Length: 105
Image (cartoon, rainbow, N blue to C red; front, side, top):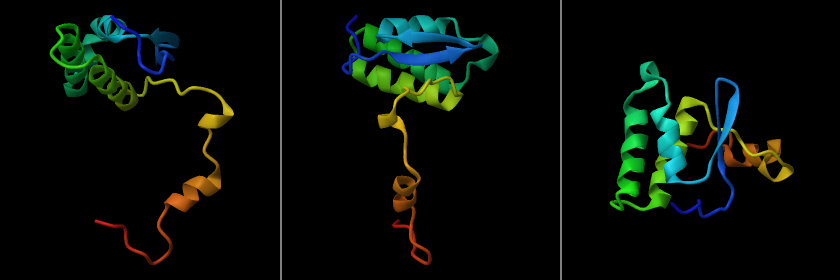
């Protein structure tokens, strides 16, 4: 399996252990070890996407996107460290609507 396009492994943490996910095969292996009692719809979507990518039915990039979503939803995604990943308060504030304005629909 090829590595992810960014060249930077996705890091996930389960029970205090950080693991690097370099490709779809790593993601599928990780999902096989996921606790049975925590396997829900999001888990099944990620596993199905990885299986489909391994079978060349979807792109590896799409499967990794689904796995990344799984990692975010389950709270296991480890955010990369560094100043470029930090949001300043003014950046977040500028994205919020001004007082009295309605959000676009």
